[in-house]
Length: 275
Image (tube, rainbow, N blue to C red):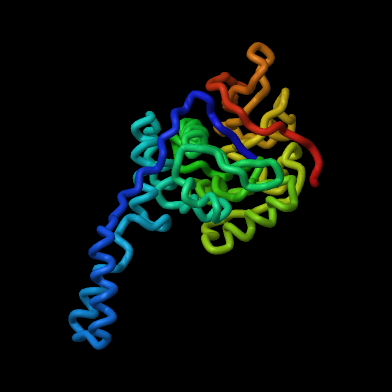
């Protein structure tokens, strides 16, 4: 489940490439044929020279840090969120055919007509959660309810930023995919639930942070009921004026609810039931 922000510019992933001239490659091959038994120290030197240069692999921290640097240039300033984005390997949550695009600021299909959200959108929404009263007081997102697990990427980020996370997905195929994607990196108190996200998850309520990756014409009452005092909710909402969606931020203060509408976004529709 997911989104793309029409306002956010795209920055293509820039990977340094080392290309040897064609002649040198041919010469090296010929040298190998003429000298099949090379001195051990020469073989070690050749192995070191032919190894993948540091920072070029998708699992390299340098690749993720380039993405983080671009998001910082775009205005993302929440250090805990930037640190989490620099740690979670986004390419592990997309199909292998799309892995080379994983660190571009773009949404990508994950199956069942759903997408993984742009890193800039994910970062922006998580940063909004960190501006809530609980996060300011405690330095973390507390107990989190995520609506729309999708491929599990945002759940992995939340697990680094919260004390506990409950993530709900209504599509069985995506729920199973997220479980597989997170199996290698399961950390902290992270629970994946297959169910109707509109109902929230009462067993661990109330939540200090609620975040949704799908938007409807109104917020489900269950989300409001399960939001703790001092907690914050961030979710897309259909905007009657523009005809599109905007990000809605809701804070539960001691005196009641306070809400405001922010950026235009484009998420999948919020649906009920499971499939």
